[in-house]
Length: 62
View 1 (tube, rainbow, N blue to C red):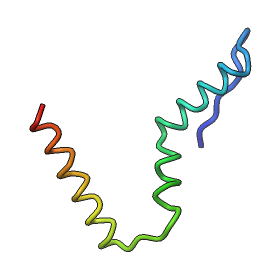
View 2 (view 1 turned 90 degrees about the vertical axis):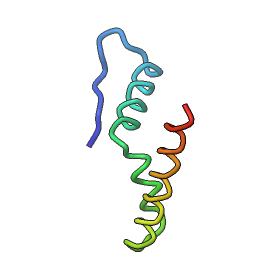
View 3 (view 1 turned 90 degrees about the horizontal axis):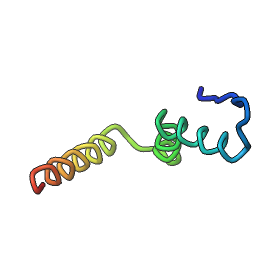
View 4 (view 1 turned 60 degrees about the vertical axis):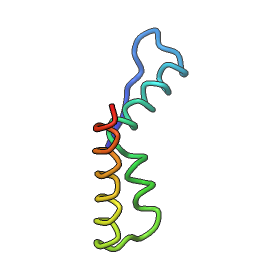
């Protein structure tokens, strides 16, 4: 579970920005999007393979 504590002299906006960064790095939102609908193992494997191919293609084109 991700949490942040208020630093001395920090305003609410800074705290919120830091919290959003922690959530992003922990992958909470990505996990939430992935679990929104059920995916079978085969479907997830196909998506992972397609994502891997896209990543490799982007690296190759650089």
